[in-house]
Amino acid sequence: MSEYTAQIVWQRDGQRFTDRRYRRAHEWRFDGGAVVAGSSSPQVVAVPMSEVSAVDPEEAFVASLASCHMLWFLDIACRAGWLVDDYRDAASGLLAADERGRLAMTLVTLRPRVSFGGDHRPDAAQIHRLHEAAHEACFIANSVRTALRCEPVIDAL
Image (tube, rainbow, N blue to C red; front, side, top):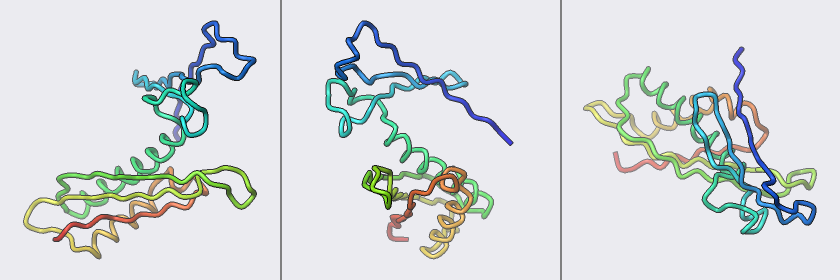
């Protein structure tokens, strides 16, 4: 068993607060020293209360799923003997009403595009199997009830 931590820091800094027009900008601090600017989504809380350049929880959720999938994909491909040169994912998430009528991330779609090197390269079916195995192994995907779709972008082989 492993435990993971994050420190979330927000300060009022003299803002009135009770009028609901306070800034949502804050920091995410991680144990390795990384600090990430966080905020509410401008699609949820209007600018200037939201900070457009910061990462919002919805984006982080999508990125977390995409990152976990990628890390497993790379590991599984490596163990299978494939040489991965480049991996890019244009992932997206859909915030919509769930079956109980509450706003939720109801669908996350991964669109990984992977380039392979070497003389021995996987075909489309093998690439799909690698993605299926990565999805099954992903801790984050196994932790959420959001529908997760993987639509690999396979360039001409």
